[in-house]
Length: 402
Image 1 (tube, helix red, strand yellow):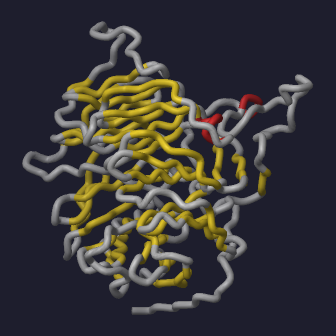
Image 2 (cartoon, helix red, strand yellow):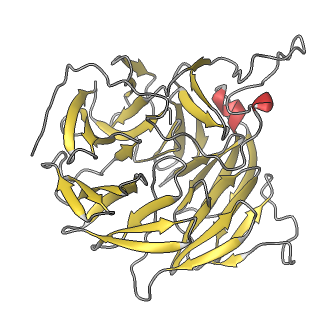
């Protein structure tokens, strides 16, 4: 393996085009930016500077950070631009975790904790804003178990699939350190999609209003779609995806709802992952490798690997890189456009829960046994560019600022 391990190396610099930016679905105009605070001075009524977010500074490039939580709940954030690591308040010992690219949500049996990584990107189509604020532990919510989190500019949804429960939070308030619940929905998948919600519940996918209600349930204006056993969801540039027993349902920007069936007998993915906002997403294909779902074209593609994968995500770049972690703890990079495969040596204990994040240039793999995060250049033969030491062994992990 061509590996360079350099614990003392300076953080790599990212240009404004180096990292995929946030979702382009349903974004509001800059004059009413609600990703973290008001766009006007409430006290004076005067307009704030373009793109203003209360309590945050605007930067010229993505403010990418690694947010990590140990088995004991010790929490830290590592700034990839400065190389500095900062300790945050401790949280409950995490049993499950999920991230939306800004917030890391961890959970135990009866409580869920929200940690704000303090950096994020807002894509307005013709231009992009990059923000940085103080990272912090926000608050807890009653209820726990496996958890998922997704955000738009205005809403953050937290779902506990095994309980069939989901909550909608005000995203602007959350960015200011306050948990303001705006709706509760009985669902195993709940996705914010512009100003509406996409919910998978029972055997149906529905588009809901922001308050969690269907505007005209059971009528022609109620875009319900059959979906047996909804599990796993993601929002892309082309639509919102809900996984089903026989494939997936994609809700488009125009509100149209389309079923995309897998080949007969294929083992379904129950989770999806992709570079932020990209239209092609990846999910595990049993022991065969990975499924790629093109949400724009409405088609599946099987990417086979020699060994079963335990985690996978789609870069969706020009070379169609797919990055996974196999059962030996190796990072596997498949260039789907050519079929080329590159692997690292084992980077984590196979018994560990694999934690994989990526941006347009690098993949990051949390190594709990080594108290490190490994940075992998997937476009350069799966080369390990460096290994970043953390204060504690990470069992929950997120790359934030995308």
